[in-house]
Length: 349
Image (cartoon, rainbow, N blue to C red; front, side, top):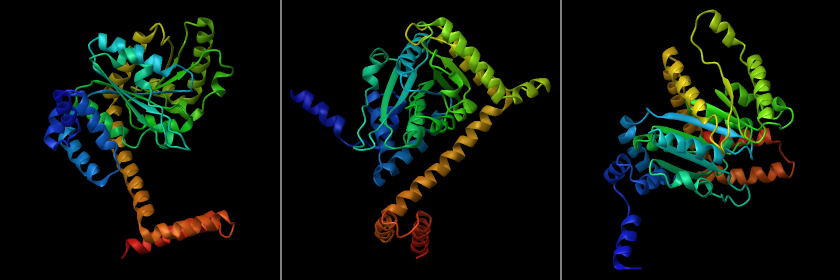
């Protein structure tokens, strides 16, 4: 390695000041943006303090992007779909950030983090940014700091933020609580379409896209028809709203192909229509405010769990109570009560 390369590596490794983080993110320096996301994902107290200072400085430059959550069962083709959609969007003049959450091993905690490999064309696009992050046990495969990562990408000038999730079932509802538009990808010809996905996800879906229509257009059309009928039953209030003249978004079902790109233009038109209708009805602003409150309480819950587990008195009691529960000497309910009582007593000291 040359002296210049050594100096460059040293520059990358050195700790950045808050001003350098702010300037780097605003200039869309990809290396600094990546380090900023690592900073907000860190569990170290010092890093978290700096991360929150950074977010406060960048907040005035956030909030304008399309925030779209994308989920679907494994094998539905999320990565191919996102790469093709993202490429179409950058060609149309958008700047696209992809926050792709990888499943973490429940045994080792390891994660594949292979999204840049699976989206190599989009990863090489100068108007796109892909950030794979390990789920690390987070509910629904959404990392603890996904919200903060979205803000950093917006501050860097990305006007479209796509959040790809693991696709593990009903817990994916968490995604809908942090994005503006929630898209569910489904497969054609996968048996009983309406039984193949949790009802809870369909209830919060803004769009359902039957992917891989290029393989079997007829099966895709049949699945589209089934989903349309199912959504009419789940969202009967839309018909009532229309009869009263109220503006309300009605979930749509489309067919598309992530491999060929067919139907993706029409799908994105619906994403933009959804945003327009949400803004005109006032729901957009209301939803963003609700998301902030959910964010606050999720952070309260997270910090309380950390404080509870890390306090030495409570930690010692937890170990003993876990052993008692495993031995059948105490019920889990009573054990939980003792832990909370101990934490309450410690907190009052």
